[in-house]
Image 1: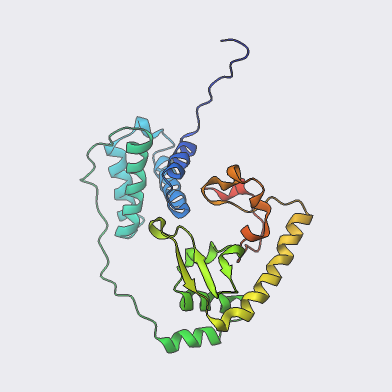
Image 2: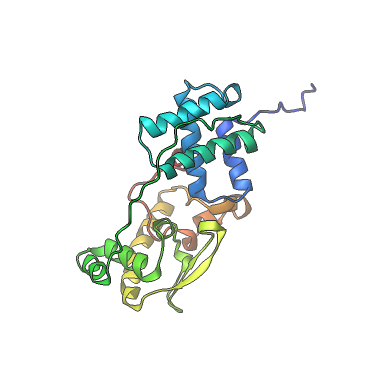
Length: 243
């Protein structure tokens, strides 16, 4: 090999998983979930590489989740989907037959539907920022994940609208912003602008960007419009953000 040729560095397994998930434009929540269960599967099997394992190890892991950890059927299915994705899509290996794994039973739980009065009571007894969160969740029909992914640019006070980008199923939509929340939204914008300004002054890195837009638009990560509408209380570097 000539001195001008750089050696090919093979990416770590979890980085390969992340790259493929992002290439397929899966939701960030799916990425975190898959990484979590794949790591769990590897650690359960004493950190052996998945290519050296197969149906027997998968069966034992799924059975352990159901019997020992007593996870729900949906949670066990999450783990199963993550592992199958790893084998079939990343490693290009057929995982084999693990159908004999003990499966968690589906719950017959019927969720309680909260009445309008109870919702109004919750709003009345909530303070400051939590009141705004509840109003947006209930008044706009937002999922919790959608609420915490809101950016400043998603809030349109002029037209009383909120834009939700690439939510469940990769779909985007626009919802109406309740008039009763406008003053609270303005207060929140003023408060988070102080945090945004302090971050810029202290040289703290910009916010996380979706779909790797930080590569395409490197300056956008530091722009006010991309700042979180509900930022975290404590700063956490991107490198520590991922599982």
